[in-house]
Length: 495
Image 1 (cartoon, rainbow, N blue to C red):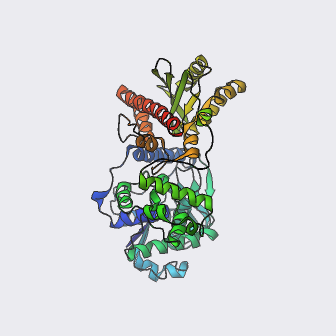
Image 2 (cartoon, helix red, strand yellow):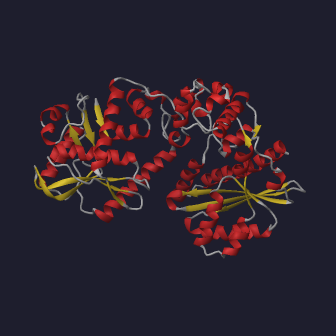
Image 3 (cartoon, helix red, strand yellow):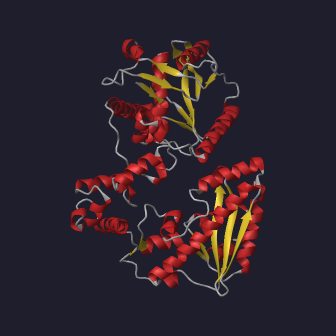
């Protein structure tokens, strides 16, 4: 068995993913999405910029060494030489070394699981003043991560590197370092994280040595980019798994199991009084109605919703439907899509306000303000809060008067908010795509997401292939039309 930094990272994020990476059938893995490849490229660029800024004189082990054991030996040679900074080094600890030597250096952390080797590949090993077996210096690991905050999985992996270094150089580095997206430095407190690392590593090894396959649990945010997603999702569907019910979190799932609820159908049929043993009445009612909507494949009006929907969602002669495409890495909103609907003539015109280069963002912002001003009485319908936050960002960035911004935002109507506060639909999540698909709207390019548009835009900037822009515009227009379709359905259902 080989315990690696990647395995620990996967285990901390999703135990099932770590298990499948070891025991799963590779033929059942999804092809890597373009967005995952883009994130990987961005991570490499982030590492390169960090090296240039903080560690310009780093050295690397020999890349022609294909065997990671040989790379580990070469890394140790550089450490013995006292190289100031080692990039892409390899740390290896064999089972035999741990049994014979490591306990004399640091107490073993794996008393129950010894039949395994350890492999870690820290981004950097940085020389520090102090005593080690190499001389008057030792090395501390530096992990360069693309995340914006010091996530627990980053700290676990950094602690793993510190553990391996402690045994190798006969002194444990006191503060492994994380360097995050904005070049923020974060020191990991080993007094807190060494025990957490021990628990995580031991549990991971036990799962793998016992071949204990973790249960499926579908989490839209966590699972979306995983290459095992479709494999796990198929299993979840066949089991009617409760994780497919919106609102069922891992902790709520455990609570439902305590009262004998294990499937969507059993959740739909359970006596509400029994559910109140483990959660409050309002939440129990919400989850049960959601399950009933899924089982019966029907929309349900929320009992507490007593408002006049036509007052909340106005109908006007002119209406604007608004959707944005953004590039998060550049902090750029490159497409402001507006669908103009004239009710009296049943005319629909799509205005794609597109920044063909990042420098054009200010121009499309001004074009949007001009278009919105041409129809001052038109409500601006959108889906979720992103559009409002973007308006605030662009207004601040390009010095739009506050009064003008407030008048603009007073016209915004969030269709997502009105859906989730008024109805329950038989969907697995309340994204625009799930809702619009259920009520009968179809995108012209099936299977495409906003993530793919981000990749297309990046490719456009490199290639100037206009077919990429055409695909983005088509997707954005369909988002606007889906918002219109959903708004009309909601008015009819509640009217």
